[in-house]
Amino acid sequence: AQSVTQPDIHITVSEGASLELRCNYSYGATPYLFWYVQSPGQGLQLLLKYFSGDTLVQGIKGFEAEFKRSQSSFNLRKPSVHWSDAAEYFCAVAGKAAGNKLTFGGGTRVLVKP
Amino acid sequence: GAGVSQSPSNKVTEKGKDVELRCDPISGHTALYWYRQSLGQGLEFLIYFQGNSAPDKSGLPSDRFSAERTGGSVSTLTIQRTQQEDSAVYLCASSLGRGSYNEQFFGPGTRLTVL
Image 1 (cartoon, each protein chain N blue to C red):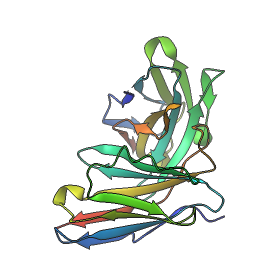
Image 2: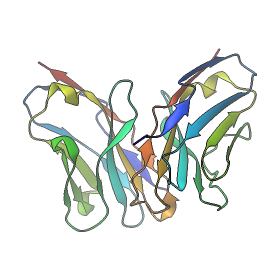
Image 3: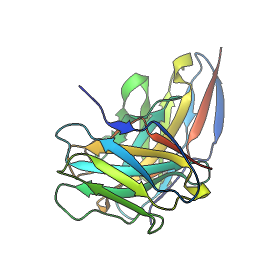
């Protein structure tokens, strides 16, 4: 069965500092990996996705993520955080074996200090 | 263009009552999903429709939960004899097609509270 672990439930970061959110997955084949963001009162929005090819993927809002097969990780990064990045972030996995239903991690809530 | 819409945005009901939650997907999207977001279980898949194929119901937690999709568009999630553990935000998403490479666009959700 596929699963996703986000080890950090909360992260606090100062505005302008860098941010890294961790994601580890378990999947028997090549996974499709996603990062979603959920702002207060908003629906889930896709930040970026990885299917194949270049292991460093760029997304919207200045985010990027790196797929590391050897570590079963897909960590999300942003070089300089803005106050509007305060939100909850979800890593998710999907694959052919499970159709394309998403399996989500528990989420990481990011608080941005001024 | 219009995104995925869901109604109602909030629903408060009494234990034992039935509820219906509605999802209007993005026009032209053939795939439709229901997920549930709760404090205890996080975000979990419930059911998936793709065109005229039989739905994937593998995530439905009990036989009190059912869903249908009429005319390949609007979907209704029905919960019978609601229980307090059904309290959650129910999210609907749609995508252009079956493949995982098709982005799922999420609606704002319906917050269900069972008293």
